[in-house]
Length: 330
Image 1: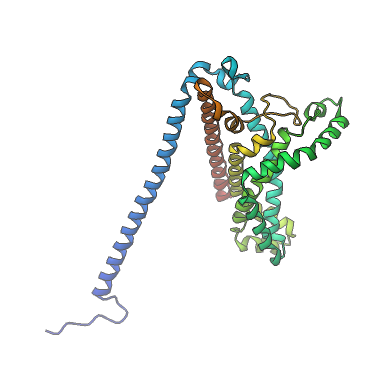
Image 2: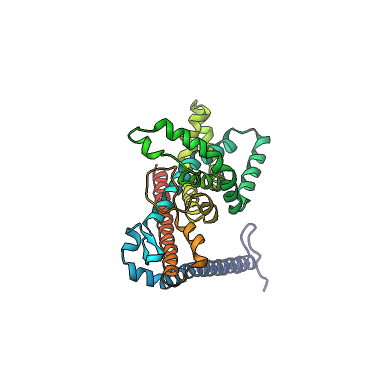
C-alpha cells in the first residue's frame, strides 16, 4: 500500500515530533533555571538570617543589660559600663543625609549630561572617570580627607561661623569649628564616594528610556530640557530612587573614611562643624581593644546598623514599586 505524502506547507510527523522534543527541552531548561534561581535566592536569605541571628546572639549581653536604652540614650562610657548608641545613630544618619544632599543633584546631573547632552566623544571619558573614582579604596578618601580636606576646610568653617554668629538658626547650624574634622567633612567625603555609584546606576536607567518617548516630546515642540523633564525623568525616576537608596546604604556602612574625618566625639548637636561619631566608625576604632560587655555593645551597634540598612532597602523597594505601578497606570 502506498503511503500518502503530506500536503505542501503542512508539518510532517517528524517535524512535529522534533518540535515537541525541542519544547520539552526548553521547558526542562526553564525548570532547571527556576530551581537554580530559587536556590540562589534562598541561599542569600539564609545567609542574611544567619548573620542576623549570630550577631544578635553575640550582642545579647549588651541588649539585656541596657534594654531599650541601648538605642534611646546617648551616653557611651565604657569605663562606667554605660552603652547608649543614640549619638552614633544620629551621627550615621546625619552624615548620610548630608552626603545624599550633596551627591544626588551632582550624580543625576552628570548622568543626564552623559546621556542627553554630552558630545559623543566626551561620553566615554566621563564614564571612565566615574568608574575610576568608584574603584578608589575608601582608606584613600579618608587619608585625603584628614590630611588635605579637613585642614583646608578649617578656615572656611571659621569664616562661615563668624559671618552667621548670633543668627537665630544659622548660628546654631554653623558653629565655630576647631580642627575641620566634623559631621560636614564626613558628609563631603561620603558624597564624593557615593557619587560614582549613583551616577553609574542612574546613567544605566536613563539609557533605557525608549527613543520613541524622546521623539514624541520633540515632535510636540519640546526643548531638550522639556523633553528631559516630561519624558526622561518620569520614565527613569524609579530606577534613580533605587540608585539613591543604594548610595545611602553605602554611605551608612562606610567605616574607615568616616572614622578618619568625623572627629570621634559622640554627641547630638545641630552644629555641622562640630566633631561627631558614627556606628561603623566607632566599631572600627574600638573593636580591637574591646572585651566583655563593650565588645557585645559594639556588635550591637552592628546589629542596629544592619536593621537600619534593611529598613532603608525595604523602603526603597516600596518606593520604586509604587513609582513603577504609577508609571504603568499612567
